Length: 168
Image (cartoon, rainbow, N blue to C red; front, side, top):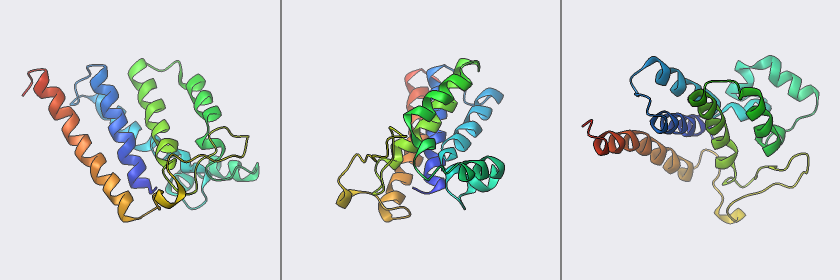
């Protein structure tokens, strides 16, 4: 999937977390969480040379390349998610869950790609949620449809939440 798709998924995750914790979406805390979500969503691609995240966090990306981390392995694994869980556990709860869930959307979306994801890394087996012939190719029309769905959900979820809680 492309960075914009992962960013949208991270944004939706952050927005959902803020609503879950009853944080007003128009606040500094929510603005920070939404920005974190947009960055955490595509962050797993730091292991892909040439990706935006690899360029932005070049020293870390370079270190991953030196130690031989390949794309869709360590940074897309349950082991990495657990490490992130431990590393971020001291953050305030809404920010903690925003980071973790937004990051987790990345390997989840990549499970629909034909290449699959090494969720159990260092075991090299890659997993997909759909058969290869149904998998979504990066940059394809199918991915664009997912992006449209994420945009609609990003608008509808808070609208429904506000309507149900009497804010609208």
